[in-house]
Length: 203
Image 1 (cartoon, rainbow, N blue to C red):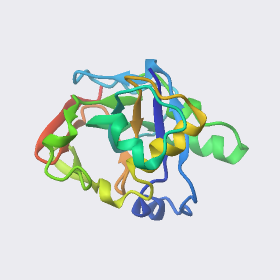
Image 2 (cartoon, rainbow, N blue to C red):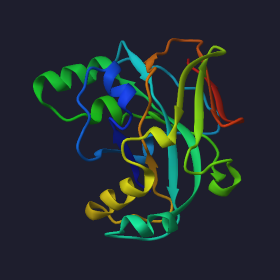
Image 3 (cartoon, one colour):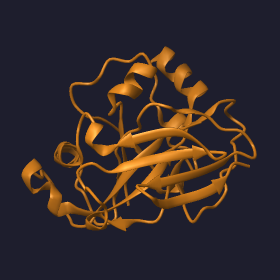
Image 4 (cartoon, rainbow, N blue to C red):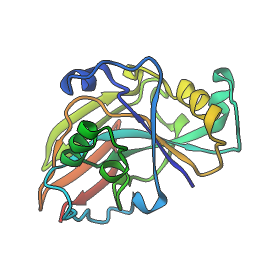
């Protein structure tokens, strides 16, 4: 499976990071060793002093496709969940400064948290999915998929120009404002609408 991620996809997150919005989707990838599921704890890695959470809507691809047009993209997914794209922010800044790639700060082991998937048609409004992240019981991020700069159909059409999409591939669609650091004994809970998608501890 491929873990495909979209960066810079919410205007308010770009503002908080003092970043200009992209003119097309910004894509990076994670290996399958980045997966963290079933509410297993996340262990802070020793190579970073600042790991930050980024809550994101995640879609699962359900059929094989290449060069998919935007109008046909809805045929290629019918399940979603909430995930976290953990980022080693200090390493990211180092890589930016030297013009290097981002893999060490974005694709490390267990940096891609995913909850259980739910059917898209079970949600109140599949085109405007609300989600939130709680840290130690306090809401730290709140988003709505309708606010994405590039919607899911546009993302699928764009990504499939470069990569063949296969059954089981997942796409992290970007994070809204409110990203921040985690520390040992923090508890992270994620919700799609009113349904809890994950609940795990930082160790």
